Image (tube, rainbow, N blue to C red; front, side, top):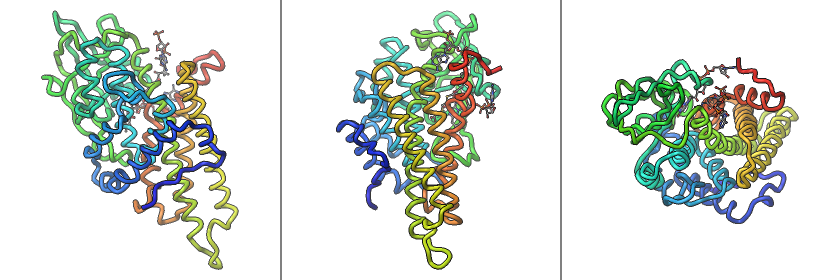
Length: 390
Ligand code: TGC
Ligand code: FAD
């Protein structure tokens, strides 16, 4: 199968450095050679392709933009291009990397003690340990500040009680970062190791979206952990929300990947498929209108991602910039996948092409890491000065 050629209408590549193009090329090749041949099998089976973890570690995808501990220290733009290509393979793969890198390694790196960093970061970077991030609860999704999970100090331990829901990698994680309220009502982060008595994870079945990703519920029942497993460097909702900034940034780039794949599939199909007087369906204005919408929105999404990436590399990014990136680009990808599915007609509903798999995956991506509408409200608050959450 030929390598994916990319989608570049407006000389986007002229804005990238050689290092950035190399990061994209390496990931693109990995996805074309290693991911695409197996992903349909995993999507059908509802399994995550664990066999790819060692090579992803080798390629430096885990904690890619962090400093030290074996991390490859990519720029934020390079990391964004990596997530774009991974998600062109499947959102489940990008989710795995987002959780490992942005939601587990980043908080340990930013807020952990020296011994937590030395113990976990090299293992997580090498893919020898897997992490998960437990913020959402059955009754608290968009409003994590309401969480019920509690941590009570008892001598040299903390005792955790509560429930987490929709946790990516939950059943395969060696370490779970659990966000819980202390006795003072402030949110703190705790590292809970697999096998700790009172800690259970179970797989959520029946998903029609992100099938090649593990999603789990977690239960903590009188779960006693050493006091040194508390992340000492942060307290308050600012802790988990800072991690989400990192992950949402990767998602904003990532969503361009499935959009490019769906556009590419729709363009090729429309040029080959003939209806009415043996003319390609691409010759009809209504089909062209869809293709033009897609390429225009993909181009705008690329420029938005690059500008946010450049600001992040310069230390000037604001969380609301990242909200705009996540909100716009995931919406764009979801609409693109739907239009591509229409253009493919009946052929669009089977998994011989990537289109419906991406379309279904993007339903989760639209909802997790802050729903589309929550990001609207975040930006609305920034520009008006008025919160509309309640
Ligand atoms: P609010 O009162 O606004 O803020 C509380 C404290 O947090 C600070 N803060 C931030 N800090 C860093 N980054 C941000 N983006 C921040 N937003 C707010 C804020 O300054 C304040 O700090 P302090 O020191 O004054 O206490 O909080 P709120 O309760 O009103 O909530 C605001 C809201 C709704 C935007 C927030 O709760 C939110 O973002 N909700 C969405 C929840 C969400 O995104 N959950 C994601 C769960 S993880 C996930 O989905 C992983 S998917 C993984 C995969 O890729 O597979
Ligand atoms: P709700 O918060 O109940 O929202 C339902 C609807 O109401 C949405 O449309 C929302 O936009 C709307 N709504 C809510 N509040 C308002 C408001 N104030 N104004 C207007 N509209 C509003 N969480 C983790 O902690 N860790 C993970 O690893 C993780 N992985 C996930 C993986 C998958 C596959 C999925 C689907 C979810 C995952 N999540 C994870 C959970 C995810 O972050 C939540 O689903 C998300 O935050 C939304 O919460 P909710 O589903 O409870 O929806």
